[in-house]
Image (cartoon, rainbow, N blue to C red; front, top):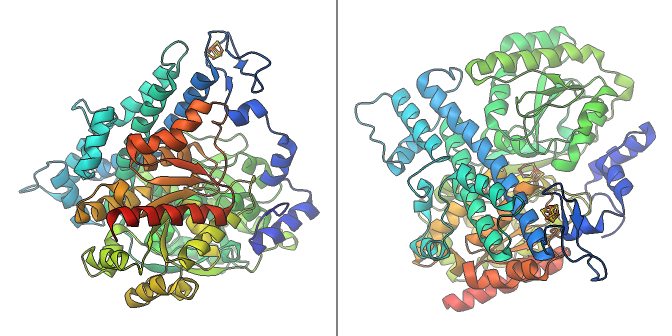
Length: 620
Ligand code: BF8
Ligand code: SF4
């Protein structure tokens, strides 16, 4: 699909507003960047030392080596490893903040947080070999928090959550030497290996990339998910509204955008404060309307049914409605353009993380030891900004869609009646042909939401149960695909399972760190069947990915044995060797491998063929 920015009518309307008001968006800046640097696209430029920058001539006429002698293979593999390390560090640092909050609950420092899922707390204690008898809940939380913090720098040789992996998989990792030894360690070693003059062998660099990514998927991200569940509750199915139409003309609108639920959960609490509610009314508003965006939006959507104003490419458009009193952000996927854009409206752009500052933003630092006070101050600032809204500039597109989110592994198990057997039976009888995980971002290189929505539809039509996270899940929510009624778009087998269980054919499993939920589910099904994850009729896809986190995700999904289709081209094609390892050799090494397919219908076919192959091998 060419020359169309988005399939979402709300986006099309807002882009018209942007044009009329002379506002610039990511789509404009993308066009201004074209043609994008060919060396960068192929991954063959290196700035890792000051003898460079160096680049390799892709046509074979110019230089084929950097000043140090590094070849295209080395440069591409090094760049890829750095992307993985950056992605893994983002997820894992998020995980660390959540774990620290739990420890803070234990010590009493994080006094505004509580423990919402004691059962999960106890289960995790068992996993981390922590005894709980005769200990208070606070002592337990502190001890578990400290044990989990150790995982980042553990010296015991491997991270604890690796025990969740089926034995066959662990054996593969052991033989390849890629069991992650500690979360921070793998990231640090990635930077060491890619420093000038260290690791130059593309296979060695990629193997370490897999190890580093595993410390994210089975480590940092998994801790983020599990500890968020302990603190904020394990999600259960919940209904809500989605898209820019959730912004209200008569209310104080606060958008919370970014990733860490440690902030968004406190805002959820603060907006319920009767005093602030009264202040909003005093300032002429009907109330306070908190809406989410991107993954932090997913976190509060999953647990509270808070409306989501949209996915990654909606962030600028939300400000352009002219009805946002505060855009509150923490970390990751926040466009720095928001600062200047907000200054063209009355919107306060409020940064909160000591790690993420933006020139032009109002910085109100979020501190976990007085979290609720900070959240209240942010809400107060938003309320007091309401009278500054220029009503003549307000345009809110009407589009909203209903969704059902909240499918944690626990919720799926409950829907199945407490065991995996009904799901496994449905797979065996081919009512469910297989499972596909669609995850990842938006990217102005491709028509917004087009790949997500069309791939999802194509897969469910062929009886593939789709599980989603991140901006992919929001795309489906906006398209109305996250509803039990969507069963009518599914093949007859999948539709019958959905009707029996009362679930949608597309399950929203959370934010991007919650891809760890998908791993846990895959591991559980594999263990139940007595096979490796790589033997299951499952696949992954990132149809519109853009972030380095997505690179880490792709790597750990593949390393976990799962075939993965990418919808935008990764910067690796400058090396035949690296491309071959990722798309072919990986299959023999770890079971999973990558394919690149920008067409969502063809990508769905690749997944279905893969699922059928796996079914045949299992004899089902
Ligand atoms: O972690 S899907 S654009 S919001 S990176 Fe970002 Fe991509 Fe959205 Fe969440 Ni994930
Ligand atoms: Fe060039 Fe080698 Fe330095 Fe990279 S590490 S910039 S290829 S000299």
